[in-house]
Each structure stands twice: as structure tokens, then as C-alpha cells.
Amino acid sequence: MEELPPVALIDDDRDLRRATAQTLELAGFAVSAFADARSALDALSADFPGPVVSDIRMPGIDGLQLFAMLKERDADLPVILMTGHGDIPMAVQALQNGAYDFIAKPFPADRLVQSVRRASEKRRLVMENRALRQAAETAQDGLPLIGQTPAMENLRSILRHIADTDVDVLVAGETGSGKEVVAQTLHQWSRRRRGHFVALNCGALPETVIESELFGHEAGAFTGAQKKRIGRIEHASGGTLFLDEIESMPAATQVKMLRVLEMREITPLGVNEVRPVDLRVVAAAKIDLGDPAVRGDFREDLYYRLNVVTISIPPLRERRDDIPLLFLHFATRAATRFKREVPDISPTVRRHLMTHAWPGNVRELSHFADRVVLGLESGNAPADPSETTAGTLPERLERYEAQIIRDALAANDGDVRRTIEALGIPRKTFYDKLQRHGISRSGYAVGK
Image (cartoon, rainbow, N blue to C red; front, side, top):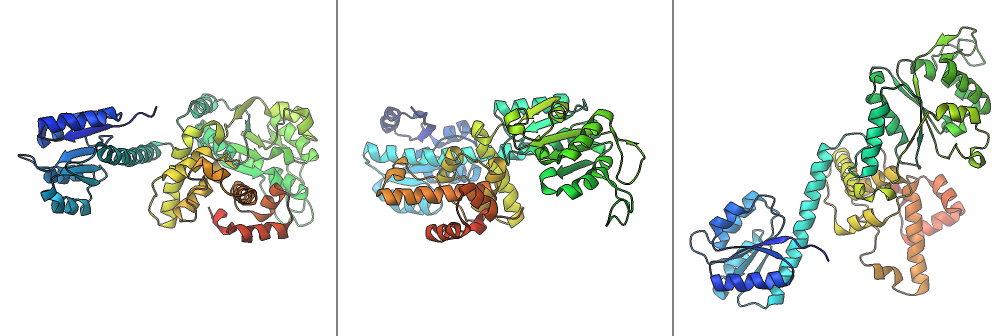
């Protein structure tokens, strides 16, 4: 059973106070009852987690004055006023000034209970958003290392433990999980942080270019080499070299890279000179290099040379309790970039955060936060589980298809080619379906 928040009840009439407290306690609320406003003010902290229910007519500080004082402490604290018929105009004015509700005496028990339930839910959402904002402000600025789950605490512990060991590292993780950020964190937490952090995506360069990028070349080493170029490996000397999508590295380059790892030396193209390098290598792959059936043409000896330490980044679906915190961090960053207000996490958005599979992991979550801040997204999760089974079969299939397309767009950052490949449909069919379902691709391709 859901634990209900406490309720503060203020009424100078002892019998009515006892009866009202009993009504709320029977509904499951923990009631703190006070005979006057002063004692309530002394007892209630600024972060009281539940609503306040107060009579208006009281000696000393009346209910309206109490409401004004509580509003100064916390404008988001829901205050419900109980009023006699003669006080209704005053209660209406208080409502316009921000009071949550007023209830005219005598009132049915259900009327009070329902109002307190709604106020409690509002207060719960406010307190949750505040806690997330505070956690986001104090969290380390290095995603995906923000997180309070045991999986993320363990990841941070491992990184701190090996940061200064200079051991080469293989980072395993799904698409969008933050492998480069882990590599950057290793660099920043090590004594190599004064050196360069050099990143190279092996899958983004053609075979004819990658050796020159890695090892450098002298002028005239090949056609088009008009001047000397320092390679990425040499530039990373004294720091960290990050090789992403290393499974895409050509076979000939793998042989040379193996020698770099074993001898810590390079020979640029066009010269016979051997140059020593001092670097740590962090590599990442989208596939399991430890599985011979998946590894393909990737050299086994290079895999074992890289696999001194393997760090696995947990996907978002395995650390769901971190998702609201990560979302708020991204939303805060997006709000600054787009000059918008940071939105609270609505129940619909929260439901989507906690039920969506997040195949694109942290990258997908970041783009979802951008769209929420821009007002392009309100959360795709249905308001009620029964909505997924409502309507005729064709209507349900239409909703399901639209959601699959949205998920694919989000996982691939709105990139048409990758999304079409993921969906396995022709380009024309893809655009036809976008039009039919009213899906705007631009909302999934927010610039970073």
C-alpha cells in the first residue's frame, strides 16, 4: 500500500479537531494536530512533506494569516482552508492568492479526504522535483557518471581505483551509453590530466586515411601529403588516446596498433625513425570482442592486449532509478542553451522515463530532455495502461507502429539513414508513415 504523507491540521475547536483528525487517519494519513496557528508554525519545517488543513476563524493568528505566513516560507505548500458560510468570500480571495482549496462547513468526510489526497499528490511531486534539482546541482558534471544506483557507484569506484595505474582499458557498453565520457573521466582522474585527451572514431575514417591520422606522416610520404603531420598517437603522448569503434580498424592498422601497445613506439609514414610515446590507450567497441563468433576480422592478440581491464557501462534500463536525475541534468543544460525555464517532471513524463526501454541510452535521454524543454514532447507513455488495448485492432496497431517509429528516431538522434536501417523499411515508406502518424523528425535531431 502506498505510504501517504503527513497532514498538518490546525483548528481551535477541540471536538472538531479530533473528528477531522480521525477522518483523515481512517483514510490512511498521519495527522499532526494543533490547537492554534503559533504552535503549528513552530513545529512545521520549511520542507514539510504534506499539505496543511486549517480553520479560518481562530484566536490570535487566524487561518488567513497562517496561510500568508506559510506562503512566505514555501509558496508551493498546499494549504486547504476550512470555513463557515460567512467566510466564503474571504476563502475565495485566499484561493485567488494561492490557497489550494477551501471547504465550507459542514462538509462530507469524502470531500475533505479527496481534497487532501490531491494536495498530497501535488506536494509529493513538488518535493520529488526539488530533491532531483538539488541532486542534479551537486552531481558531478560528467555523464553518464551521474547516478546514485549501486551500478553507478561501482563504476565510479572502479574508475577511481584504476585511474592512476596507466593500464590500458577496454570499455564495453551499448550505443549511446557514454563510453567516451568514461574514457574522459579516466583521463581527468589520472595524473595524465595535464596531457592531451585525443579521441578517434575508427569507424568514421576510410582505410586510406586512418593510418595517417594515427601515426602521422612526413611531407611527401604519399600523394597529397604536402606538409608534415603529427599523428593522433604522438599527439596523445603524455596523455590518453581513446579509440572508439575499434572493431572497425583495418587489419593492416591493427598490426601496427598492436606494436604500439607492446613497444610504446611509432614510426610515422615516410620515415624510418622510431619515436617513443608515453600514453594510455582506452578502446571501445559496439560489439563483444571477446566472442570469436562476433569478433570477425578483429585480431585476437590485439583484443587480449587491450583487454587488460574491461569496464562495462550499465544500460539505462538496468539503472532506472537514475533516469529522473539524469533527465533533470539534461533538461537544466538544455534550458540554459535554449533560454527556457527548466520544466518540472510531470507525471506523464515521469511515467515515460520509468517505462521506456531507452535503446539509445544516455544519448536518447538527452535528446528527449531537449524536446521536453522545447515543448515538442510531453511524454509518450499512455495515461493509463488500458489505453494500449483501447479501440479496434487497426487503431491499436497504428498506435503501436507510431511508437516504434518514435523510439527508432530517438535512438538514432533523428538520423534518417540509421532510423530507416533500424526499421528495415524503404525511405518512401518511412516518410509516408511520418506523415500519417503526424511525427516530426526535426524534434528528434536537436543540435548539441
